[in-house]
Length: 104
Image (cartoon, rainbow, N blue to C red; front, side):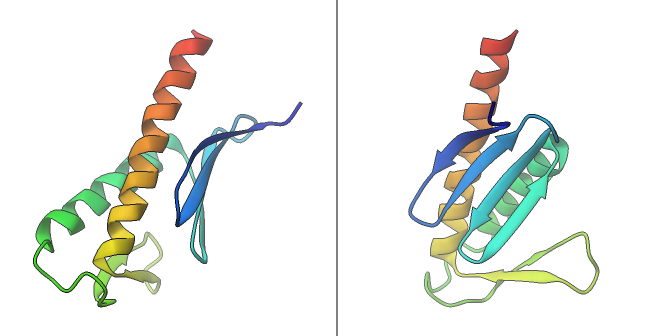
């Protein structure tokens, strides 16, 4: 049995839930992340804040810095990418909730 369940896919990436590791695996462009549900939710909230604070910038300028838990690593995005990443994550969260409801 495949432990990976696809959650969501859009033009920029795809997300899966790994049942054996209890992690969300997300690929977005050339970025790949593996996060617990708590880390995934916190990352999604950081994206929402970043988007809310930067609505009036050029949508294609790579100037949005998203900090990571690793002190010397940050991710740089443009506004279009942030919106697509947030779409991927929010739809993944919905798919996770549905999956949990169906399993209970």
